[in-house]
Length: 246
Image (cartoon, rainbow, N blue to C red; front, top):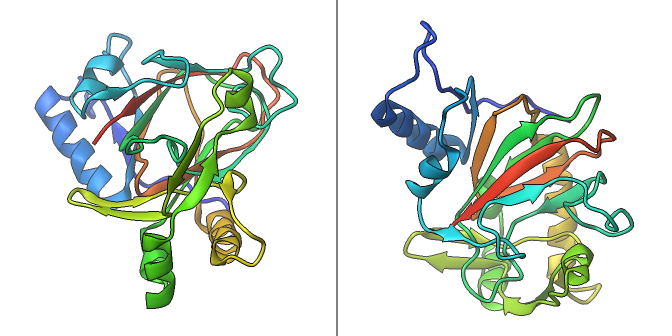
């Protein structure tokens, strides 16, 4: 089931005038705290997305080293699981394969939207799912370190990342959720297998679907929300991405 997003912020007011920087950031943080994501629409042509992201925290380079990454179909990537093609992506968090803390925020903005169906980013909040864990499950996922691997597409770039982390991690800035449907290494009878199935089912029921117009910007709390992507056919679809530390 697909739900429409609730956390939408217009960058211009009812008169068509841009919001002040102070009001834009205040409303942004109010919506982020409540929903864990913000979709910004009515973005003026001269809006400085990089400057806005810098206000949220320190930049974390993408896998290639580029701070501002491109998300679009890439040559030679159509046969692997990778953001750089037109295939769907399963629910996951970013940075589960990092040795350091994963990015706190992910920002995407649209250069060229996909024509035709598909290409939406989908999001779901893990906070209520974590609250439903039994005491035994919570203890398991806080204390047991799992092996994680990076995606086939990133491996093809020459980065064969392998790390060990728990699924849940408590920090003084909040709980980190690490999750992947296909890159968490576990035995078939491990409790993580049931968690993957349960959370994938919950994602399918509860996710919101973000369709992009040109210059739309989406930011979400990567410690809290899982994201995925619907397949699409228009290879001109082009987003840009910044990862932001806590």
